[in-house]
Image 1: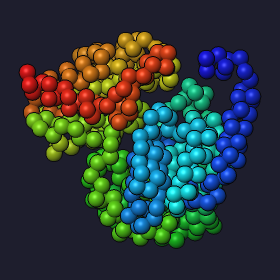
Image 2 (image 1 turned 45 degrees about the vertical axis):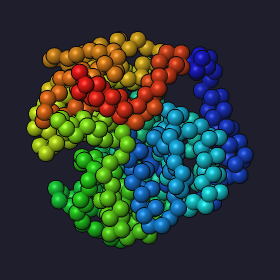
Image 3 (image 1 turned 90 degrees about the vertical axis):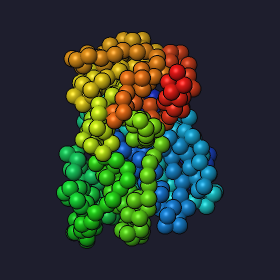
Image 4 (image 1 turned 90 degrees about the horizontal axis):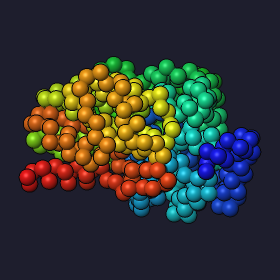
Length: 415
């Protein structure tokens, strides 16, 4: 139905529809963002983790905070799962959430901001104080009609947030986001193997401060260092000192569905949400290069999103798995209205060596666990802590990757 609407109704009318919904949502809930400090996090990868880490820093500082990500909704101490399968909820839902946060006495709200959400004006009539840029790699290219359009959509957040910009200056697209004006700009980067750097600039471009410091993060992977640095910059911009930011983050041991270790012995099993080429490669690099976590083989279970989205990346995901994995199992993920085996075969095209194709995701996980030996690492990607597998006709199968791994592990041990 949605495809038919897009085909026969002019795009400007669809844009008007989204804009009007955003306006009515803000009016209905009395423009709640005017009464709270709103921090928006955008980028291709790391948004959810960065939202989580920012929230932890602000809460550790005694600041009541709300947060909305692809994983959960959180207002103060109350948290519930995001079952919408949308990074940014619809216009009325997001304005309602902001009003609830204000009414609960929250001083801050941290929002995950997606390019698809911006495209549909879900960011409109939200007074963003702070915009955070994590990184940018090709994603949603078919939806946006090219990488430049995708990048411009991300830039819209920086166009509307006028006070604070936080930018990953190591990313090759940083210069684009630096062109937007703001009262303060925080640039973060990895200064070397053992230290991190943050530069703070005022609205005139003058350098206010540079901090060189180490960060003993328990979360694995260089990509998580970047996420942590983005969170520290937000903390600094809100008056939380560097040591307090570091202390908060260094206590964080894991995040649900993000490089989450589910089984520790006799082999290790991780689950991760990674479904973009860049994110997948970072996950594999982290596990492959970490001799403490892996002394045997790396067994990879992966799939690819369906529903006609970003078909170009399917063989690319296969190539990346083949580059790092010793054993590869390609399985179902979210086929929507596409044939699952067709998607699996497209992923497998990029794998020149031996590959197993198992449509049933539970069966694929079981096979990986059955194959694993002491010292091996199994990494299951694409779902993380998502609550369902999406099939044709809007049908959803309830899914909990963490519990499935545990159930199959225990079942094999009983045999």
